[in-house]
Image (cartoon, rainbow over all chains, first blue to last red; front, side, top):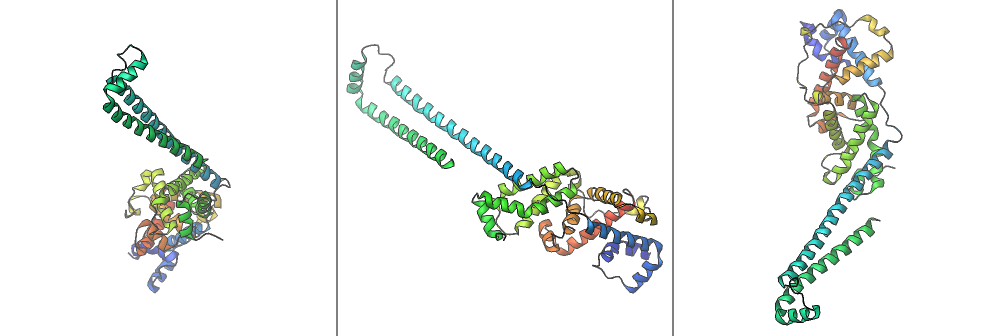
Length: 158
Length: 182
């Protein structure tokens, strides 16, 4: 009976965090099973305390920093790719806008002299052209700003 | 002289690689020691330990400093080990190890004669068979780096529970050594 009561306390007694009662002490010295368990628990305690702490290799920190560098590079690459795609999309939108404008003005259906075409276009649809040109100019300014930001970001990264 | 923790964390947050290098140097012993004691393959242990620091690097911007840095890192180690040994990560800590349903052998007197190497091997195998939380409790406590308070915070347990679990872990270890890893 006392063996079962003592068994869960063996580790605490072995590491000194639980003080056994005088009766427990008597039992532990007289009972072969509990005595052996206690001895085993003490040895486990000693082995655990004596275990060597594995040391990291000398190159450990350098390897971690290298992997972090790689991660950063991949992240920057992804940002660069996204930015390039955005710029390409912007250029495409501006191009398509210009094309649409030209199409709506009938540039592609006129086969006469280009000078005459410009004069006719400006004189007939001046109001419309000016409003559309403003849109194109705003787009061009935004594109220039984006390219300027890109150049600045690349220069700062270097 | 080591940089104070809040300053080191702040510098790391600002992307200072020198500060992060210092952080790695400061904690690599603890992280690698804990992991290498649970992951027997040294190359794999190093890889897992490096992964922990990558997670630390990614997570530092979100580290609010409510707990100690070591505690936070310790939690990441536990998660990494749980992913490494999923079958042991979910093992119940409250499971009662009942020696009556198996053939428990009494510790033999000739155990004393076993060589250190054999004993280390048995001990290592028995520790590796413990649930992950028991492993890190034992490994952390006996590395002399982790106090009961830190273990309690890292495992989100009251200190008394940590002590109880540590005793249970050692009891289970003793039973494993008396039976399966004899």
